[in-house]
Length: 513
Image: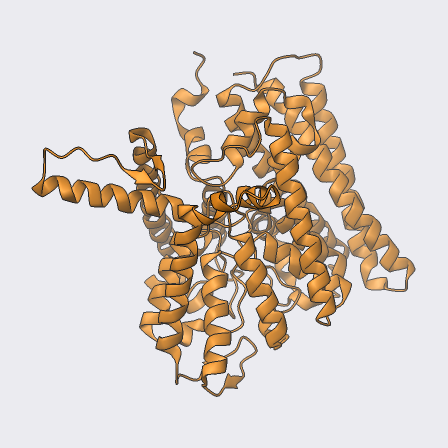
């Protein structure tokens, strides 16, 4: 394996990340000039982090200086995994350095005193999980919260996909890197050239970003709040600038706008390319889109019926009188937020009836569409697994019938069926391992099985909130360091869809062929 060549490309990736961080640092400097002294430490932390990122990029480039070659499959896997792990470390530096500047007691939230907390927050941002260790979000400087939201936006389509879009140096290896990182079981390009595909996807992503920013601004939010919440929405992340998330705004119009954009973010972005080229039938006949909308509608119906006449407690602790209006507002919002794996919260759903919570947890695993910014198993995999199950069930009483498994007009090949079922099995196994490890590491805390299980599910499926002690109004700050390491691994495994990370632990991966 050509590790030095991988390091050279990783250096370019760190260069791109540092350049984006520098933009936020400039914004912080402008805030200082406008009379916001609380931004001074944040500005300094961002600038020092940019310097560290550039130094790392330069060192990695020197490591591979003069080397030619291309990314084979193993190198592509290593580049993507290393890109996320190293990128999260660089992105965590502003949080850690900032706390060092404010260690005199002016920082009200001590969460960033620990490096693992900073790394956890950064990984949560890049993987668009939205789980946070912060207990007082609003005490942080706005520039740090903007950088926190930016990690969401970068991780939405993927930092490596962005890398492929803006830098053509990877050559034929770009397709392999794209396939490793792009979410979903069929990350094929919308155009024959993979770099063109990456650019088109990012242009669509930017277009939706601008649309939501303007929408939220028209609804009365400031530019800063609009940008931060847009980054979190379209990345299906869930980081908010408010302690009580969107529930603190308590505005039905904003909730509705966010619902619409969460739904759009959970759709395969390749379908937007089809819409742009007026291929209406391709969109209309897409089986995954139909299933995505049907599952969402059924989930909304069941949850709303189960919470009707039940008092709703918002994330600010206020109790809302039950009515059809409030039921629809809070029920639909929470279903969309959790199935798209955005994780925004307006209500404390841990207080809802068992049926509603069971549906929400199920939707956490189902997730959004392949090729979207959402997490979870993905709707298409659930469709394939369901069709395989029905086919095998028919073979029990009709063993001589050979029936092809189809998804829409396409025949699902045996390799695709095996891949979908294997992925589901992998998720179940990792969920079980994560639950056991968290429960074991938190033995002194005597946490409930529900807390451990939903913490594992929420991090593995890149959602954020769970039930019990990790509910909509809680955070992850109280977990021990080993548990945070486990959950950080679960977040990145879930974002890179299990095998891209797990394969690194296979001894044969590192052996020369």
